[in-house]
Image 1 (cartoon, rainbow, N blue to C red):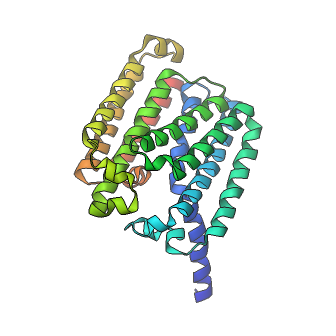
Image 2 (cartoon, helix red, strand yellow):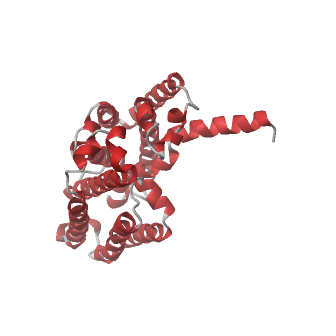
Image 3 (spheres, rainbow, N blue to C red):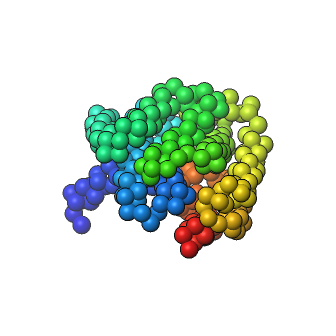
Length: 299
């Protein structure tokens, strides 16, 4: 391979990295309503949900690009983020802004095919991401709450696309799980950056005075407790046509316990998606849970 072609390969790789496609796993929350509303095998809701998934992949990538542009200077003081395309200087800010605008326009135009409420949901997601990048992420606890809010909006968008409704159970599970992941990420940043944490992100100084460990463990217990109540609910059993969803509880418990082990035993959690994609036992647990859910609901 010539030097010129090698450079071209890296250039393409930089642009792909800028979009953070590995983070698109988070948009899987868009499909939750499709599965739990028993519409997975119906062509129209399935196609609408898949379109919603594509729209949110574009919208989330636009948000990541804007975040990297705004944080480029701070990222240069981070031992891991310094390798990002913008922080390292491999991609110029003007070009990144053009990509972000293009992705935003694509997401909003694609959203129009799913109706006005869905467009409003996508617009709210984009607005929340912009507020998070410029303001909210500098406010302790509120930053983690905003991250959780982004996941709730993903779930609500899936509800709208599938023609379902947002149940209290789905809302609570999404919010609590996302809040757990967000606080675990802050904990990891504190451990990774040490005394330099404040230089990278001022809010981390406030998190030093916040009892993150009890909060994380409490949220983990809350996620498990809410899920158990959901599976044992008579109303849920009547709506889903099965009272055996409780058989999936062990997978949820094992998944949460495994994640806590990775946080405290291996000091991971800074990148929840990377943790999921890089840990085989956690992947197997999530896969088994998904298979069990589909089998019980559609078998």
